[in-house]
Amino acid sequence: MAVTRKKAAPKKSSTKKSNTVKLKFDTGWSYDPAPESRSAATIKPQYDLFINGQWQKPSGKKYFATTNPATEEKLSEVADANAADVNKAVSAARTAYDKVWSKMPARERAKYIFRISRMVQEKARELAVIETLDGGKPIRESRDFDVPTAANHFFYYAGWADKLEYAFPNRQVAPLGVAGQIIPWNFPLLMAAWKIAPALATGNTVVLKPAETTPLTALKLAEIIQEADLPPGVVNIITGAGATGAAIVSHPDVNKIAFTGSTDVGKLIQRSIAGTNKKATLELGGKAANIIFEDAPLDQAVEGVINGIYFNQGHVCCAGSRLYVQESVAKTVIRKLKDRIETLIVGDPMDKNTDIGAINSKQQLETIHRYLDIGRREGAEMWESSCPLPRKGYFCRPTLFTNVAQSNRIAQEEIFGPVLSILTFRTDDEVIEKANNSPFGLSAGVWTDKGSKIFNLTRRMRAGVVWANTFNKFDPSSPFGGYKESGFGREGGLHGLMPYVDIK
Image (cartoon, rainbow, N blue to C red; front, side, top):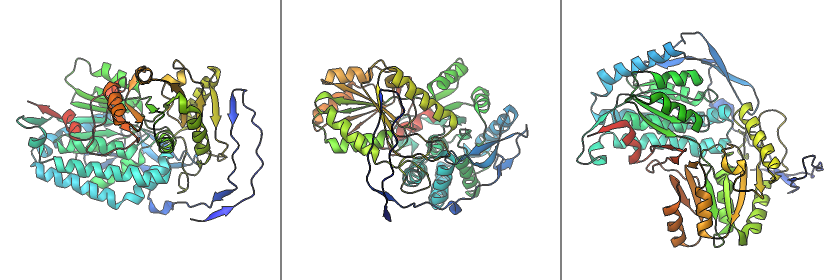
């Protein structure tokens, strides 16, 4: 990788409010661009709906644009499914379930799922490029995490398909029927794999709706499914906005709802299916507490914090956006964090040097800016990187707040951006009480050299996943899910099979 020395550009003085400090840190050098080629990906100018193994025009003849958040250019036009389209997709899924998929021997189902996983691997570079173009995340993250982990989930559940008697010993299990699945914009391909793979392994059929701002990798997955010769109707992928998702949730012939998204929408779904026999798993918002004790390996912990909030732009519901630091090491940790975030490169997501890419949409960027204003108004002190931002696209500097109170909104509400709130503590009991004082309970992190302290915190913290001396590590064999307003049910691992079967 080439490194070019450049004369340091003069820094402009900050024009922000008095409680905002802009760091000035100059390395004197910068990386030469190392962009990934767009030629690896084929994006059609227009996509229809994938229903019953075929591409079908939307009944309402409406399409909407999906854009590249880093350049604001239109990538493609995508079909907008209405209630009639949802009904066609559900009917196709029901027919496939009744006549083909539920009757197929489990070992044959496994072969199809395994074939999909291999094809995802074969098309990994193309999928990574499309994910980055459509979603704005750095190509390194799409290439090294999103796509491989998606393939691994298909591999993992292909192995379970003919072994359900071992997953549920001495129990009789049966598939539920048609699963309606709605996924968010932060991990489009991975979320599709999380939901489709266990549903197919347990004998269900699927109607999946990706987020309207990031539909392209799900549609590319539909092409892979078609190429894999999966029986028509087993997986149907339709695109649209909130109305399309609502039509899936309310359809009377859908037996199971799997949703990942905001807590507010999750509550609407709960109300909608109340009084029905539909099963549901909801993976909702989060405000993860990341805790650093004075005996922790501080450099490792700082890097874990960076990985937990900035490398993913804060776009994961389990992002460690609340950092609790023991008072005795708070100044040291904050100094190290400021130095480290100042080295992060914000820019073209297709550049392999980029650490932080584009925010997914203009609306989300406006939400982040609104919370930055809220944090300053509440009296917290804001630091942001001095890195330049591209002139076009939706970008946000990595930011941290200090002097944050437990009651501040930036410490209680999900921001979904590269913004870290730092609080301090003195004792174990104090930090456990503070960490649990949140409506969310999706994940948490603990950094300490003492195993007894790790076990004490993991036992008492109300979070679905607690990482010890690491953060944001995922494996197909490990369950993931939350407590409280972070939802219910688990995805991944053996636990991820349970929501898709009727156990007797």
